[in-house]
Amino acid sequence: MSRNRNTSTTRQKRKVRNTQKKVHHQHKDRLFRYIFQDKEDLLDLYNAVNDTDYDDPNGLEITTLDDVIYLSMKNDLSFMLRITLNLYEHQSTWNENMPLRGFFYFAELYDKYIKEQGIKISETIWQVRLPFPKYVVFYNRTKDMPEPGTDA
Image (tube, rainbow, N blue to C red; front, side):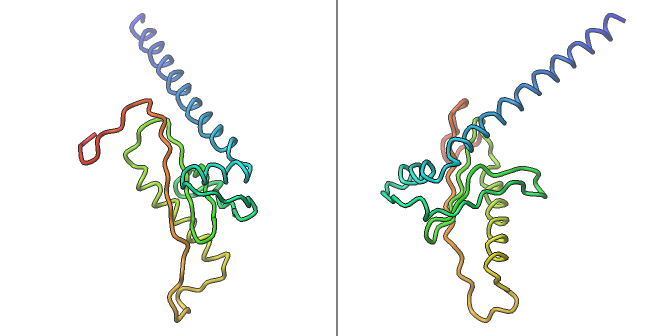
């Protein structure tokens, strides 16, 4: 009986640790989104990342996805500026699948863009021009990233 109690206690501790980790990551994600929800702050971030000096936050069109249905997750920040579709993600843990996740996010963003523009890709006789994608992942290095070209 004491073995069952110890096993149960161990499971409860593991469950609490896992729950704490999930809340911790969600908190960081929400903070990143909160900090840059204002167009002026987002434009400042864009300028810092791209070494530009745009000064009209009204030129930004926020395109952040609230929920990507088939993935059950949200992207952090996405926006259009001129002819570029920008996707900014914040990660506090290393994730080898960020390029794949970015691909899915962009697919959803482009699908939304095409629908909003009323483009019928099967009926259009000319090439559809889409915004240029730019994907940036901010990683705060709680674990060192592997060197390019090496296995993690």
